[in-house]
Each structure stands twice: as structure tokens, then as C-alpha cells.
Length: 171
Image (tube, rainbow, N blue to C red; front, side, top):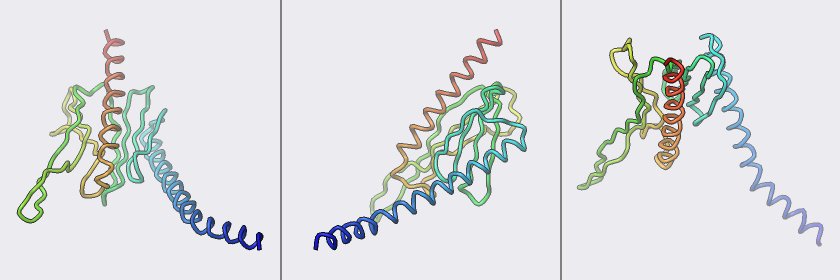
């Protein structure tokens, strides 16, 4: 009788744990494929990232400290976007939040639509500032907004420190 109870407990535990194991394994596989794609894009641009961070299964950010470049891959949209930004050319880096009004019956409420890291360059080559999207209300889980805000602030601070180092080494 004890053997049947132990076997039943092991079977029940397996039924509960196997799906989690498979989900984790699938996520790891997707992360590995995203990182491989990111490194291929970097290699084709002649960049060797020192540090990479996977923000989610569609976004990865990295840093090439030797050449002072910020690297960003956004593969969440229909079109993949890869950016290799020279930090020496950055005049300003700020976090930009956009809000939208959602109507629910007679009431409306304001929600954050996007969180972007926006770069203004010294010699403005582009017509508008470069924007790296960390959060999009229409594509990301709204509960993860806080996580993406923290990540944007962390990267803003990393970029500020590198820009400060570049400024002191130029003097």
C-alpha cells in the first residue's frame, strides 16, 4: 500500500512539474536564439559586445565598452530593429513616457502607453532623436511596466557614467 501511495505522489508531482520544466526550457531556447541573432547583427556591424542583457523574448540590449557603443535589438514588431549607437555622439539621454486615455463606458483612465530611452545626438544626423522602446502597452504585459521602467533607468545611468568618462578623458 505504501508503494502505491509513493508512486501516486510521484506521478502527481510529475504532472505538476513537467509543464513548468517544458516552459522554462522553451523560454531558454528562445533566449538563446535571440542572443544568437543579436550577436550575428553585432558581428556583421563589426561590433563585439562586452555585456548583454535580455529584457524579454523580443528585446536585448548590450554594451561595447571598448568602442563606447550601446547596442539594442527589438524583435517584438513585425520589423526587426537593430541600433548601434555611439555614446560619444550622445548629447542627451532621457526616459520618455507616453500616456493614453482608455475609455471604459462613461469613465476614462490614463495608462502608460510606452517607455522609451530617447537619445539626442550632438551632430544630429537624424531628423528626430533616436528612441529605444523598453515598454509598449499594446504588446507587453501591463503588469511588467515597473520592471521596464527600472531597466530604462538602470541603462540611463550606465549611459550617463560612460558619457561622463568620455567627457573627462577628452579634457
